[in-house]
Image (cartoon, one colour):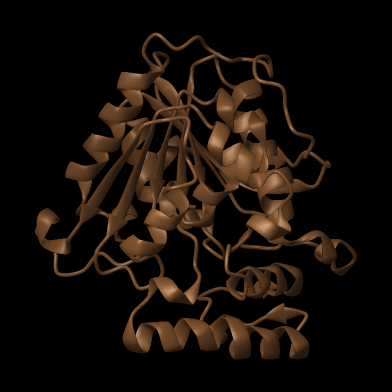
Length: 303
């Protein structure tokens, strides 16, 4: 993996013991805080290598992870049936949080959730142990949040393309529009949420209450040219956070002197001005927050 000599490959145990491939970007001895990066659906952790190295140079320890069945976290066929969105959030993401807490120096943890990685907050009360959360393109993806041809494409994806692909393939190929191969169970669950008016809420018991009870500082970014997480879809997720004051930032590519941002642009070189915002936000809320070197504090919802 790229990212300079600060990047070290690690194994992260999910809460059910499944080993996940991770990467740790190590700073010097004086750590400001730990940054846990949770990726979107089908997004390999290598996308965050530039951001991870940049933060490590500024005294922030960064940990990234590949969910089971994606990227470097390949599974034997016998285990592939456990690769679902609900498992990624309740077992893999929570396992990554515990790994950060247990292997660090007790520094506060800040969560950076990209797309589905932000939705994961609704799967466990353990995320209330973080000092703050930064969400990027985190959304609920019902087709009604798109307009015109975009709405037609999204509806076709949930109702036609993904169901057909999961009927044919054990691992859904990247050419179906995912960008990376996706285990059948994850794709089936994703399509099911897409066909549901309230996205994941009817399918994940307690999720709405967990969003409503999340009381950590939260800043959410939406990019105006994002075809996967348009601002209306981002706003739909954010309205369920009722116990915290949500800072929402809508960005046009021109705000950063670029022609395009899309769904992944905030993690690519050229947006370092924005990374400074992330860094400052995390630092501000990590200061004065007690370190959590063990899993004390808020009781956990079983993963």
